[in-house]
Amino acid sequence: MARSTRCAARPDGSFYAEAGVASPKLARFAGNNACAEAEFLAGIPGTVGGALAMNAGCHGGETWRYVERVLMLNRQGRLLRGPDDFTIGYRHVGLKSATDEVFAAAWFRFPPGDAGVAQARMKELLERRVATQPLALPNAGSVFRNPPGDHAARLIEAAGLKGTQIDGAQVSEKHANFIVNPEGAASASGIEMLIGRIQAEVRRKVRDFAGARSAHSSVRWRSGQEGRS
Ligand SMILES: Cc1cc2nc3c(=O)[nH]c(=O)nc-3n(C[C@H](O)[C@H](O)[C@H](O)COP(=O)(O)OP(=O)(O)OC[C@H]3O[C@@H](n4cnc5c(N)ncnc54)[C@H](O)[C@@H]3O)c2cc1C
Image (cartoon, rainbow, N blue to C red; front, side, top):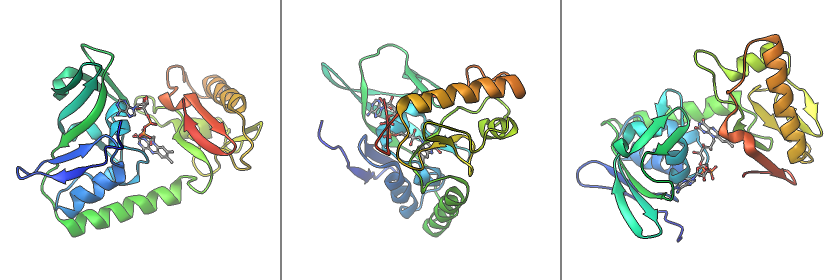
């Protein structure tokens, strides 16, 4: 597939973004075009395709709340779909009737806003991320989904696990739901062992943590670079 990085404002006020567009770019594009509520995407690394597949979200915003329709690709070609064709949940999106399609593009509609307000909000959210997340160290984002009514980071911290290390993989001191690779030497098995230890310790000391494991837990680190399998 070509890089698919076209992002365009449409005359009807919606935005067309191809799957390869960086999510922060869509946030800036919508904000600069005087739309509100896209700001949450400014701090989420990755692409519109990934954000659609994960229903990426933060700070009260979620990708699919703003999706009008999507362009899908399968072996036969392209087809248009709407939100009703999907089961959409917390960091989960499933196509109801097929399994062999990928997102090629989407049309988003954000409420009207003000460009200056949107820019200020993006700056504020990015500063909050820098202050609270270990972005200076290799990481793959939050490891566990938040269980209903609670925060994974709070549970991990309550279990006394901040700073715990296995084979170079470490529970971040800054944000307990991040595993960092401070020396660039963590192995995939070390990360998986640490994930297992966190689950076991939280379950033992704090509450049932089963099922909280996120899609991000299939992380693989290679020589200090993060990637997801
Ligand atoms: C520091 C950091 C902070 C993060 N903060 C957040 C956050 O606040 N909120 C949040 O939700 N996530 C967060 N993430 C996780 C991640 O950035 C998002 O889920 C992002 O939307 C994933 O996009 P991606 O392009 O990297 O997708 P990938 O990680 O490459 O893929 C994610 C999944 O989407 C599928 N996928 C990707 N593109 C397509 C496509 N075109 N069609 C069909 N399926 C596709 C992949 O197969 C995979 O299953 C964070 C990650 C990091 C490293």
